[in-house]
Length: 225
Ligand SMILES: [Zn+2]
Image 1 (cartoon, helix red, strand yellow):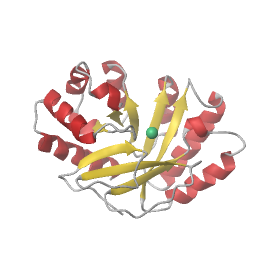
Image 2: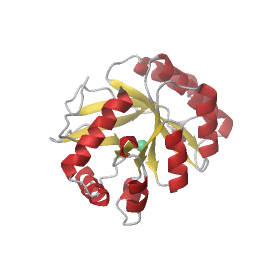
Image 3: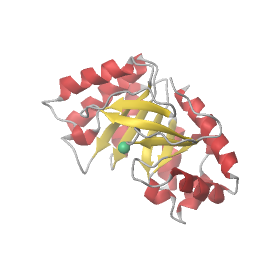
C-alpha cells in the first residue's frame, strides 16, 4: 500500500492517476463502471465505488460485486465516491440503496467512505444516523455554507473543497472558521494545480505551505487510520 510523505502535496480526490508526479500524492477515485485497474504506482492510492451518475438498476449487481471485491484490496483505502445527487442520476430510492450498501461494505472492511453529495444533505445525514458507522466519511467537492460545514463536521465527517470554490477570495472566511483537523484539498481531476490550491489555502490560514502539508498529512493518517 502506498502512503504519502509528510512533505507531499496530497490531492485527496482526483480521477487522474496514471502519471504520478513527484511531490504529489494522489488518491485516485475509481468508478465501478470504468475498466481501470489498480496499478501499483508510487504516490498513488485508490478509492473505489459506484458514482451516483453512473448508477443503474441493470448494472447494479455487477457493480456492487466490483465494490465488494475492491473493498478487500489493501490498495483501496476507502469506498466511494458514492452518494446522492438530486440533479443527476437515477431515482432517489436506487441512490439510497446503492449508497447504503456501499457504506455497509466499507464498514465490514473498516474503511471510510468518500461522499459525493449534491443537494441531498438531509439524505446524507439520515444515512449517517441510520448506519452509525464507526469510521468517518469524507464529503468531497464541498462548496456549501459555514453552517452546513459545521453540521457535517459535528457528525464525524471530513470536508474536501471544490477546487473552483476554494481558490476564490470569499472561501477564506469559510476555511478559517473550520477545525483544521477536518479539511482536505482536491483537484477532482480538473487539471487545477494542487500546488496552487495549497498556496491559496495556506495564505487564507496564515500559515506556511509546509505547515499546511503537515496538517493535511496528519488528517490523511487520521481519516484512513
Ligand atoms: Zn470525483
